[in-house]
Image (cartoon, rainbow, N blue to C red; front, side):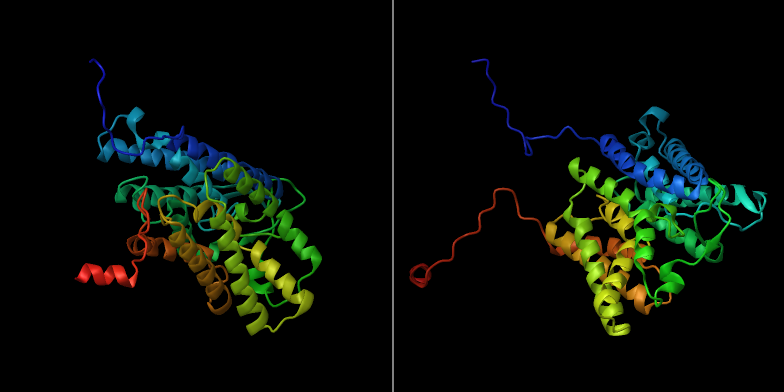
Length: 359
């Protein structure tokens, strides 16, 4: 017989997915947030996105060529994960900063920020070389590179990162101020405030976090494409909302009725909770492998976020909450082991059967 019996290990079913396709889907999902941020805050958003994406791609390519001795066409940068990191980093930054005074202004409006370009390059280098490549590249980093770079930049240039608000002149951001989480958390919240948060015109330090409508479109796209598990962002958002409702609304401020509801909704739509839940918590590498591990992971993000926001000295706690739970992920994977494929839980033996075995 010419027929040959071939034995191979599982799995025997493969999906038509690749890292590049998944990264392209994530880029597409971020397009609504990019468009919304550009319309609201100006063309400098696009400049930052291009600079961060190109820098992350170039730094990863350079690392692979210099240290891993790879040819350009074989570098991991070609899977577009570095571009995703760059865009995500840019959306987590303001439109401009004033640190060294290298900004071009017109009528007191910043039309180009060399300071921001340098910050983007520094953040991109930190994200790719320090957080990603030194740990082995994609799939081996202990934390989300864009998230870690955001925290690094915010800690390094804390006084320079100010909330930017939309202006009447498209592309020229001339006003800065404090967000609701920074100074207005104790002030009464109106329907107008909630509408501004929904649309994204409230103002934020991170331009990509503002428009809830744009982020919802990205979330729906990723769920339809089955790139992410829809339950994970939902658990993060719901848990953060409930913890903030209890700690801030009930315990600290003793709110009731409409005031309590508005306070809860403001926590949902302020800061980076929604952006982080959709694009950072769902990172394959830094997220637990099992559902119950992901459940604990998401609840932990919500709890730590609420504690930092309400009892800590830092107004926004999402980034630190995700980073802390990134570190906890290996422990969750160690103690919450997935059930083997085909496993059938054995039936409990009757007392008679146990006695028979003893005999």
